Image 1: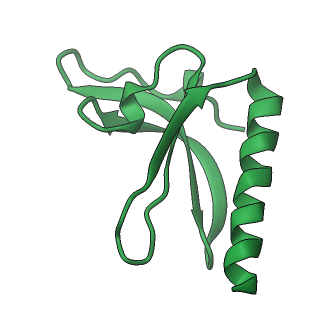
Image 2 (image 1 turned 180 degrees about the horizontal axis):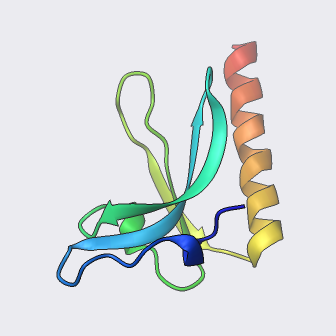
Amino acid sequence: MTSIRDVPHAPPQSGLSCRLVVSAERRRGARVSPEWLPDSGYLAHARGAENRLEVITADRSAPRVAGLGAERYPTATAILADLLDVGLAIRSS
């Protein structure tokens, strides 16, 4: 598994922050990987135990949420459960 420690350092003054990012698309599935993000971006502003979620929808809107995490596995499980609930609600409507 790739971790954030495996990512080469960004050049000084690069304006980038490295974050673990989950990307999911209906046809391509999901992946987690470290990515360099612009410091000005929403996801790059997460600090400490804060988690951020940005969903880019089919109409290109981008609802955003942020909150403190409860360690690695409880947070991931809760987010996945919430996303599955949303998906089921959309599918049934």
